[in-house]
Length: 338
Image (cartoon, rainbow, N blue to C red; front, side, top):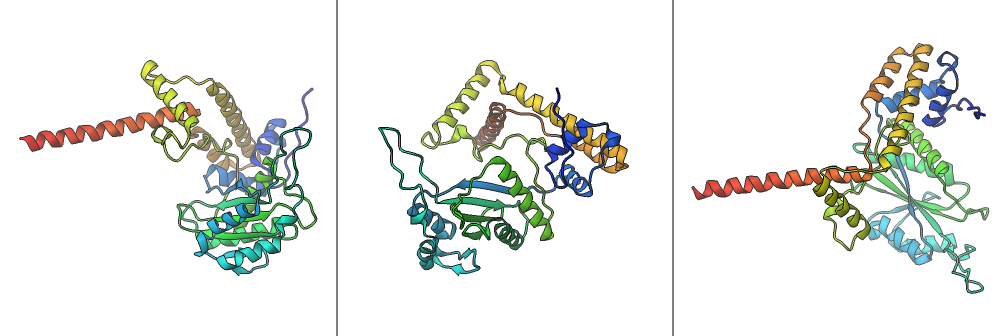
């Protein structure tokens, strides 16, 4: 028996909108103004926020090292949850105030010849980012509002803005143990909510921002910044071995076969069907222009590529560029010899 699908609440994720569009005839669906705005932002490719959990310290000295890193070893002031701005000399006092040594669970030992329990994280490190050319002060203001709303009455935290990289971003360090003794547990649903919250707060700063799953936007999984076939072996042997396997297959068969492609294609078919249902529902609601934008968006989704296919394409691009460079150098040598 098919499980009934409820109509999504206002501000719910776009995947829930897909479910609602498939659950009933298009004429019976009425998207709320908030949902229409979300669809509009997505199909017009409004910049997406990034909220990423980058780890956390399991010992006080690890937390101190991370604070030193995000403070650029004293060059940047760190802002606390109490609004104080502290320099490098005051970071020790901040950690003293957090009483990390009293966090339960970090002194557990193995019992009865069993493996030692996993180390308890004393802090959670979070990065909040927007693509350039977003004004850094807007990112900082939204990050402050996010931290205050999410952690202000529950967890101690500190943050700092970085502008020395491509995207303006804020590093947020949150004490894992809350003021009520409960620990901060982060799952995928919570991360999704955090992205939606941060996007909303960026919009409150007057900056266009969106938060939708990558798959809904037809985006492939992001890969390493640098092609792994050019990485030093010590950096990632597993990634390098995968890249060498791709290159070997290209040389031997002139093509790449990846069983994962079938799964990605099924996911893409579901996404396309969901968008088409959304377009039909918008037509029935009288949102003709937006329905047309949705159909155009679907027609221009990026091609489906697996990790192996992406590596192969990157290698082919690299090889062609290298060949062109060698041809140009040969032509210059010939010209000089005349």
